[in-house]
Image (cartoon, rainbow, N blue to C red; front, side):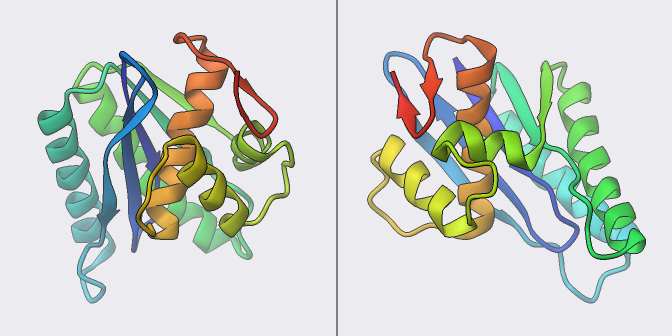
Length: 165
């Protein structure tokens, strides 16, 4: 099973591709960074196009997207919602089943603590995937979404607080 995890953002959208067949392993990942000076519609298009390229290259069976958290202000939440919508649309257009997970659910699935820091989540992602390289936080967050989906969806592995069984 190939799973694409998405950590949406209007300035940086992380993505991570993992497989569970024959064993859990990292396949690809990165960060889609639209030009900062672009308008919101052009940034959203860049995010959609980037996710569509990842989908076309890796042909995931399932996709998991992080849900919106309550940002510091309503405008930030609204813009983040737009980026999430573009990610959800990319999955729907590719006819991929899409699951959504709250940040606290993802953190709890990987570390056992729903309030874990981004660096704690990244450390667990690197451990679970035996990923030797340092990875950007947006990419590790996306991989965390994919890993949480593995544990919550029953695709063959179980995630227990802090690791796979």
